[in-house]
Amino acid sequence: MENAINWSELSFGYMKTDYNVRCYYRNGQWGELEVSSSEIINIHMSATCLHYGQEAFEGLKAFRGKDGKIRVFRMDENAKRLQSSARGIMMAGFPLAKFEEAVSKAIRLNERFIPPYGSGASLYIRPLLIGLGALIGVKPSDEYLFLVFVTPVGPYFKTGFKPAPVCIMRAYDRAAPQGTGTYKVGGNYAASLAAGNKAHEKGYVAVLYLDPKEKLYLDECGPANFFAIRDNTYITPASNSILPSITNMSLTQLAAAMGLKVERRPIPVSELATFEETAECGTAAVITPISQIDDLDENRSYVYSEDGKPGPICEKLYHKLFAIQTGDAPDPYGWVKIIE
Image 1 (spheres, rainbow, N blue to C red):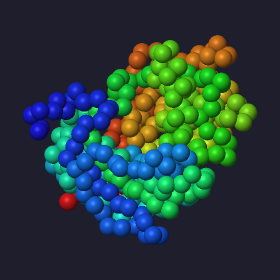
Image 2 (image 1 turned 180 degrees about the vertical axis):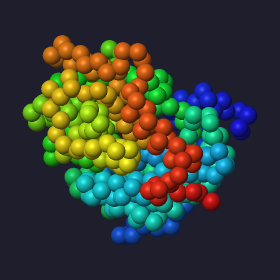
Image 3 (image 1 turned 135 degrees about the vertical axis):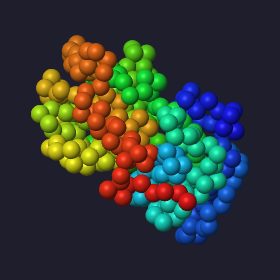
């Protein structure tokens, strides 16, 4: 297997692995974990996940360290966030301990697909929670499936850790002010497809959304959180429609430990002209520095990298976080779990 996969050439895409782990919620309780080698889910054509969007998911990564050990990053936070998403769209919450057990089992069962240390690749882990109940009326399901599958992946963006351009287009919203933006549910991503596709056609890697109510403040950045650096300060938006990023949460702690001031607050669009560095961050990309932000409505550009290189603080944060994830640096925060 290891000879058959060119680890350094992996894209961020799906590759079949050996097993996935499943668990069903029926009669008011979760059952036992089950192991499956099938990539297929049999669901009723009237399942609530298909008609009423009762679906939530997570994304996390496992890494093989220089010492050969397998490390998974902050899966306890993913478990908590999945419970938050479940509450938000009235699904049965999956127990925290069982979540970690399922993820650990999926990693161990597919260990031969974990990319080697130094390859630049990782094992991407996708927990999924869907409503299975056959209902026609708009109401929560009484049956659910929790599933974890894994796949080896390369970098989310082909450019890797290099600055890339994003754009602002006010004609599109990702989520409503009091809607589902703070939950990791599929509908938010479906809502971003049209804007994202248009941005890609114009040569941008993502859309920097503005707040959906007034279009005055920065919001989510495509599938990731936004942050900026100015005057030794790490600044990231506060909003009721942004998904709480576990990567962003981790970076704010690292930034504070590096001596930066941390601000989580509404960020007016007008502040874009004052930033020294800007970036988007998330599990898939970790950090993607932003080379420039083009406001396509105002016909204005904000440039942050003219030489194609990331800013010094973004670079330092990226390497600090990645070193903890891979075991190359101590983990004083207890973020990493070693899978035995």
